[in-house]
Amino acid sequence: HDRMQEAAFNMMKPEERCRFHYKYGIALLECTLESHDDAILFTASNQLNRGGPKAVEDGEKFALIANLNFMAGKKAMEMSDFRAAFDFFDNGVSFLRKGHWQRDYNLSLKLFVTAVKCALLIGNTVSLRYLSEQVLSFGNSFEDKLEVLYITISALASVDAHQAIEKAISVLSNLGEKFSTSYSESDNVKLLEHTKMMLGKYTDESLLNHKSMEDPSKIMAMKFLARLELMTVYRRHSWQPIVTMKMVQLSI
Image 1 (cartoon, rainbow, N blue to C red):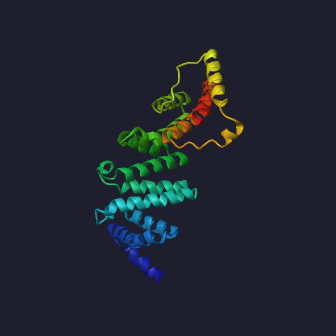
Image 2 (cartoon, helix red, strand yellow):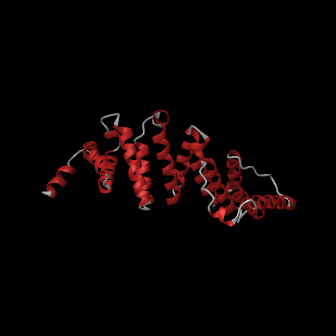
Image 3 (spheres, rainbow, N blue to C red):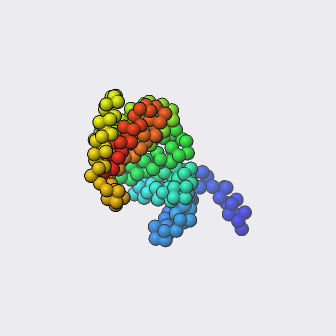
């Protein structure tokens, strides 16, 4: 029986196979949304992806399938299967239609940003560059571009640490964390004294119980500062204490 099914399937034309996979995936789609079963989610997504965008018969399904791939990709990321996650995000992007940055902005942004993250993790530099450029070109705001800026700077750090440092400083400047072009010994001493003065207002207990940072822009600034501090280990060694003290000041 199985061989008969396989023989019948192999006799289909390629476009008929795509429609078969698509219809199978659509049949599973409703079950996926209702059951929250990971196995069904992955099966439905894979079947729809094997069908491909050309098999879609209802124009309203494009965004729905793209979002399903986003859900499957996020679940794969939770399982640390970043290559599978990237494939889901990449397929999700393929189901976005022309003008998607205007029509489906939030869906486009989250698909591209998560795809960029996975591209970095699996070492796919070509996709990393293309996907990043899309977000940086079509992102509505500086805040929407921050995650991708952070990822691209992280990737650049291993190739050109000097340029990565300059880019990080530029982003931090836009986040309100300014750096001088150079620091003298007296500048370092002044910054140290100012940091000590700020810390002097707190007891050890009050620092331990200090409220968590909630401002999204400051949280992102802290991420960029942490990345910058790591990069100064290899370049601009004299800047490392400067960056560390700025992180302390920002945290309190």
